[in-house]
Image (tube, rainbow, N blue to C red; front, side, top):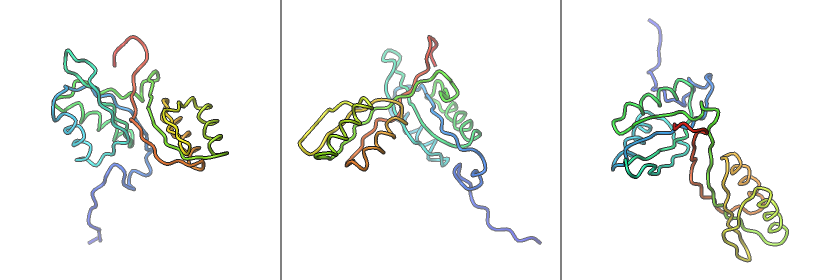
Length: 185
């Protein structure tokens, strides 16, 4: 008789999936705008051990009471496909599109970044903000709050450059995404 250890439940992020390539995908989910829908969508993720890296929700069609949930998640290609199929089966969901597979998709995010700085650090923060096209939305003699809109990677880069200068706090909206062209997603 062979020795076996107790079976451990595998999450999409366990070491068993370490050999498979982990990908980040942006999903656009069109849902009914009614109480409890977001809880059902988020509950599907948490109940199955999937992670949500970014989540944004807004009504997009007032007349038909539809909202768009934009979810950034990661996992193997199989995990992402499983997430998509499970979302499609939820009752309030009208459609699920993987915008990562759409080469013409655009992703943007808004961030407010608070930076402390005096003297040379203040000058350097302003120089970098200008290079990134960040807008000053609040300023005191000891700090700035910058507003930056762009691709998530651009915001990540700006935040990392502000760390040694005097980064205090960051607030981000999460990814909003849409496909280019005349066709709806």
